[in-house]
Amino acid sequence: MIKQSLTVDEVVGAADRYAALGFQTRGDLGQHFLRTPDAAHALLARAGIPAGAHVLEVGAGLGTLSSAIATAGHRIWAVEKDERLRGHLTGRLAPFGTRARVTFDDVRRVDLDEGLDPGSALIAIMPFDPELSVDLIRHVFSCRHVEYGLVVVPRVCAQLLATSTDLDVEEVDGIARAAFWPPSPTVLRVLELGRRSTCSS
Image 1 (tube, one colour):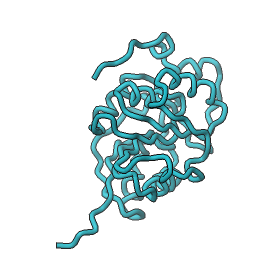
Image 2 (cartoon, one colour):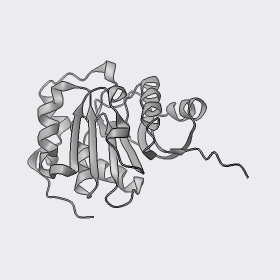
Image 3 (cartoon, one colour):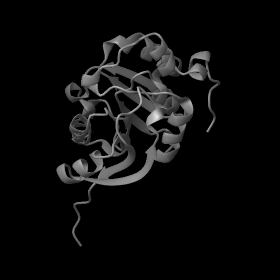
C-alpha cells in the first residue's frame, strides 16, 4: 500500500489542532475524533477489504479514517451529520476526486441502496454511545449492498449487536482510549460484522 505524503495538518493531528482551538465536540452525536493517521491505517489493514472496494464510513468527522481509505485506493462514501465539519472534511477529501463522496446528513435519512455497490463494506468509528451505535449499524445493514463491516464501538456494543441484530459479530481487536480526542470514557473494541447465514444444513 502506497501512502500519500503526510501534510503538516496530518503530522500535527487534526483532532489535536481542533482541541487546541477549543472546538466543542457534540455529546449528542457521541463524537470523538481519531488522533493519528497511523491508527487509521492500522484499522484499515485489519479490515482486509478487497482492492478498490466501495466503503461507507458513518461519522467521518475530521476525515482521518476517510483519507486513509481513499489513499489505499478504495472508493469512500463519507457520511457526517455535523455541518460544522463541512469545510474541513470536504477539503480533506477533495484531492481524491470521484473516489471520495461526502454527504452531510443523518445516515438514517440517506438512501444507501442508491449510493453503494453490491458487496460494499462499512468501516467506521461509531459514536461512543452504545444505543446510538447499534441503531446506526442496524440501519446500515438494512441496505442490501452492505455485506460486511469493521467498526470501533464501546465494548458493550458487541453483546447488544449479537442480541438485537441478525449479524455475525466477532471481537477482533481493541484500541486505546487515548487514540481519540476527547479520550473515550469507556473501553473500546474493534468488531467484525457480517450477515448471518440463513442457509440450513
